[in-house]
View 1 (tube, one colour):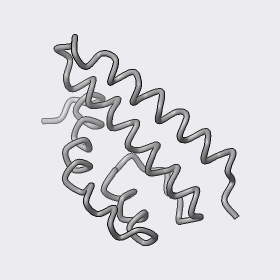
View 2: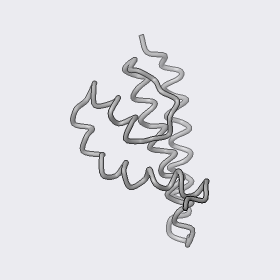
View 3: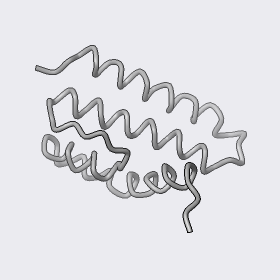
Amino acid sequence: MADLKLVREWIDKADEDFGFASSVLPDTTYYAHLCFHFHQAAEKYLKAFIVAYDLEFKKVHDLLALLKICKKKEPAIAELTEECRFLNRFYIDTRYLVH
């Protein structure tokens, strides 16, 4: 049985990240940081889906790995693959120097 309170918490946190990123979108030149917040929102929405359907929960930040878990319940979610691939690089790039 899904923990609906936990699902709601994931969605609320995702909404905060999405809302913040959306609010600064028109006025920013810090696109990598903006995309980091969109990445965070996507990660939390995917984790909410995973919790809602009692799927295997992994403590990862890789959107493609999370999407793969979600596809077990809803194969059509694969439509988000390119978007997840795009956002994935902003998690690493905004946090670490990569050479």
